[in-house]
Image (cartoon, rainbow, N blue to C red; front, side):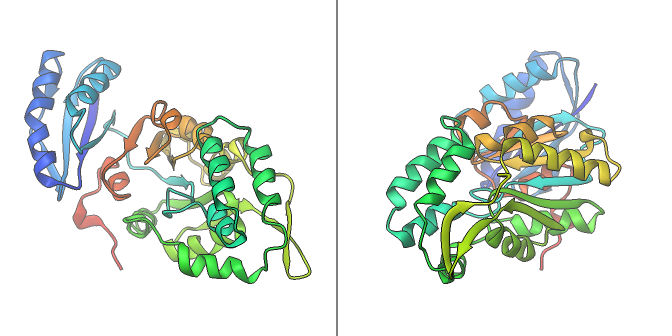
Length: 297
C-alpha cells in the first residue's frame, strides 16, 4: 500500500529534524520510504510503502511527541479532496461567537464554562445552546455587528485554504452550531461557497433569548456533509471535514479525511489527523498541495 506521510510545522527546522527519526522508526516496521519531497516552508511529504497504516501512525505519533510538528498519514491516491466542510468557531475563526456576545451581556464567565463543557462532549449540545442563548435575552441586535467587527478574525491560513481548494475545483462549506449572522459574514470573508448555521430569534430590535428550531448540531453537520457530497457527485472518501468540538465528531469521522484543529481532547483522540501547531494551510499540505499552489490574495 502506498501511503502519504506529511509533516508540517511552523518551525522549518523542527520539520527537517524530524525526518531522520521518523524514517528510522518506519524502517523498523519494515516500511519503505522514498526521498522526502519539500512542499513548502516547514512542510515535507514522504511516500511510504507499507501494509500496516495503524502501526505506522502510532510509531510516528510517538516519534513526534514533544516536537512542534503536525502530521497526516493517509492513502497516497485520492488525498486531494473535492469537498470541504468546516466548523466556524475556534476553527475558521479564533473565537466562540456566543461567548463574545455573552461578554456584551455581562455573562461571559457563565457562558464560557458551558461552551467549554459542551465542546468537550460533557453536555448535550442542544440543551447547552438553549441555556446559553437564554442568557442573551434583551441584547440589542446592533451588538451582533459590534461583536463581529471587534472580535471576529479569520484564523491564519483560512482564506488561503478555502480559496486554493476552490481554485482547484473543490467546494467549501461553512457549517456551524453557531449563528447565521456570523457564518454569513465569515463565509464571505474566507470565500466559502455557502454556509449553514442556527438562527437567533429576535423581538423588538433585541435578541429574544431563543434559537430557531431545528437546532443545527452534531447530526446536522454530518447530514450537511452527506448532502453536499451527494450534490457534488462525490463519494465521502473524496471529502474533508475539520473542526474542534464534540459536535464536529460525526462529520470528522465520516469524511475521507477528518482533521481536528486545535481540538478538544475527545476530538483529537478520534480524528484521522490533528493540527496543533501549524496554521490552516496544513490542510492543503495534507492534500499534496505545494506552497507554490496556494492562492493568496
